Image (cartoon, rainbow, N blue to C red; front, side):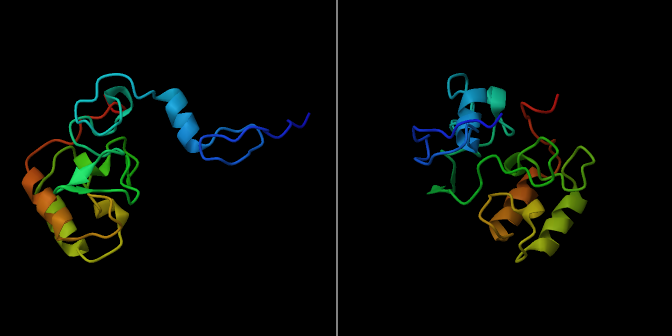
Amino acid sequence: MKSAPDTIPGPDNTYGSGALDVAGAYDLLCPAAGLDSDADGIADSCDNCINVSNGPLTTIYGTPITLGSIQLDSDRDGYGNACDADFNNNGIVDPQDNFNIRNAVGSLNLLYDMNGNGIVDPQDAFFTRTLVGSLTGPSAFVP
């Protein structure tokens, strides 16, 4: 049986065929209510970087970020890029990770794009260097 098309515009003012759009699904599954430790607009229970801002209210060095940085997780390990400089996934940010990002500066490799601006830039390398010796996360999606 074919479902009837929607007759009321959704949150994005478009009509669909009964399917929720991504924003609507996220709002349904992860309501904004609840503790938000990093004040990024994503409740901790749905945040892939609980202590590092990477949601719709994110600012990097005082500049609002809107270029796809929202919960970006390029290596799909459950940790958002903003708190996951462990590029070799050995559980700790080590000198090898720092070496890898230095070699990626200027590239479009999203794995090393820590701030979600679409390019690996010196800010990404600086941020990674400050994390050497630290663990990734925490994340609501990884125990």
